[in-house]
Every structure is written in C-alpha cells, then in structure tokens.
Length: 411
Image 1 (cartoon, helix red, strand yellow):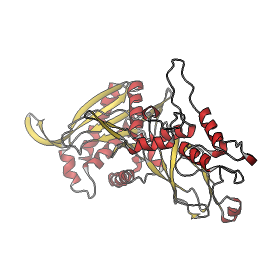
Image 2 (spheres, rainbow, N blue to C red; image 1 turned 60 degrees about the horizontal axis):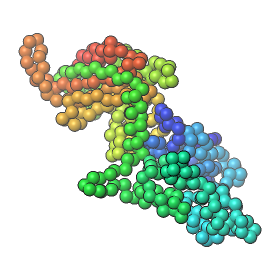
Image 3 (cartoon, helix red, strand yellow; image 1 turned 135 degrees about the vertical axis):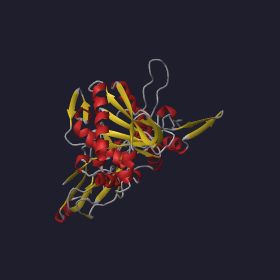
Image 4 (tube, rainbow, N blue to C red; image 1 turned 90 degrees about the vertical axis):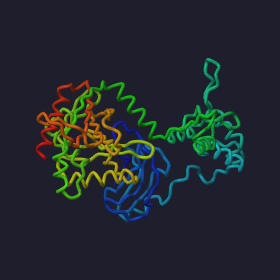
C-alpha cells in the first residue's frame, strides 16, 4: 500500500516531512499517525490507510515533497524481508572522501553522490568539491551586477524556510551562499538599525500575503453589511447546554447556504461549481498567521454537533494536530473577530477558490428602534464579501435576508 503526500488545500504543490512517528518494521493500524507533515500554513498528521507493517520511508525528515508523490509503503509482515530497513546511502561506501572535501561539502549542502572523484581509485578530493561548487554559481548578468551564487540544495532550503537569498550574507570561498549562512540568517531574524527593527516573515505569513494579494487582484470584491438582533436567540441559547453564540452563527450560516447555493460555490480556472455539501472553513488565528480548517459536511450536523465538531477542529488547529482532510475542499468561509470587543464590523478577503466569506463582528448591547420605541438589544454586524465575477449584489442581499429568516426561525 502506497502512502502518498496528500493535497493540503487549494493551490498546494508540495509539503515538507517534519518527522516520522513510525519506523520501518513498526506495526501500524489504519488511522495510526505515521508522520507529521507541513504545508505552507500548518502542520498536519498523516495517517496510515490500512493495517500492516511500515515497510519503508522513501524520504528523510525535513524534505520537501511534491503532492501525490509516494513517501512510504505499508504492507504485510512477510513483505518485510524485501523492504529496506534503512534509507539507501546516497554515496556508495567504496568511494573514499578526503576529510577536507567532506567538510566543505557539508558546509555547502552538497550531495557527495554528485561529485566525481579525481583521486586514487576515484577518491573525492578537495578540488573535486570546489569545482562542482563553482559550476553551481549563477552567471554574471549582462548589466554587470554580480548574481547570487548558491547550490540547488541551498536554494531549496532557503525556499523551505522562507528566506530570501538576497538578504543573506555569503561566506563561501568563492562568494557563494552556504547552508551555514542560511542558518545564521534565520537565527537572527530581527535586526535593529537606527531605531528600526526588521522582522523576517515566516513562511506562513508570506503564503498568506501571496494568496490574499492574488485574491484581491483576481476577484473584484463586493460587500454588503447588516445588523442582526440576537436578543431572542441568546435567551434560547441559555437553555441549550454546551452551545455558544459563535456555534449558533456557524449553524445559521450553514442553513442559509443550503438555501443560497450561489455562495456555497467555488470558481476555478474560469469554471463555476455549486456544491451540494457545505464544507464550512473557519478562520483560526495562530501565533504567526491565520489558517482556515474545514468543517466538512456541516449540513449533516445539528446545532450541538456543529458546536462539538467546530471546537475539536479549532483545538486541532491550535495544537498542530490537523489531518490533511481538515484543510481541503472548503466551500465558504466564516471569519469571526467577535472576541475583540472593539471590532464592531470589518471586511474579509475571499479565500480562493471560494466566492464568498462572512465577517462577524462582536456581539454587544446597542440601541435598536422597535415599533417606534428605542430599546437596548444585543446585536451583531455581519459583512459579506462576494466575488463580483460570479455573484452580484442581489445574491449577497438574498443571503442576508435568508440569514435573518433562519435566525427568526431559531429564536
């Protein structure tokens, strides 16, 4: 049974193996976590798809792997004899390497298997390593400015860590950037100069920036806002154990999307898709960014079911115990800043390829006119963002009106 690198969400092309939790020869059962992998935005747990023995690991930890690539194999115990018990060495054992050549190769992140030795019996010498390092240098541009020199493995490491090579000071013998230089850059992420601190952006923060920037560029956003009276709903919630106002809002959004399928949709490569199931993505704030794990098949859950499932999902997100499926196939997103009492309302950027996102402000007492009289009621402001390429103002208005009907039905 092949275990492949899963798809970690829209536009994900690769993910990194953080660590293996099972070793070759270990017994595993279906659902056992065998590895932790990292996408652009979160760590997730990779589970075995069946019972058996972990026969082999095809990639070591800290390796960036393409989505869909086979990373491990699980089989029956009698197959253990044909499976390698340890990773195959990248360098044949019979090839000698001089101590100086080995040290230089390690400093530059150079795989010695790529080096042809010129010494006795093919022994790899210092000059062999330095020759390959020089051949990996970037040619000098026609404008006369010196290019950035770094071996492919160094460049890959920099991409994984979200480090720009332009910000790294090279210390290599020939002016190239080494792995040690990358490590030095990330070990001192902040720099003070003339009262200004430079903060290195995490990989997650860079990914969020790129995706949201692209969303604002590609999708013309259209917004509608409304104030909703929750007084009666809050009174009823007091009679329901274990359910909070945030759970209720998620439940009402799901019921609304079932009646307004135009917003339970995705727009990909010029094609618009309506979804029968509501996979509700919930924005969760982490220390260095925001992720949107998905509550799949939310239309099948009761109010109490959504409360339990949502709480478990958020807890997995904050403790880095998400499953790959938790980040896939979202059809609509809800972003709630209600925990910050000073945020009455805000607008949110659409999470592609979805076509809508709902921004929820804080719930608090506000003056409300009812039958000509002034009253103080607990209300909330909701702001709906829509992709104007595929939905218009009337669609967003229909969502808000339907939400009001669902709220009154609950109350």
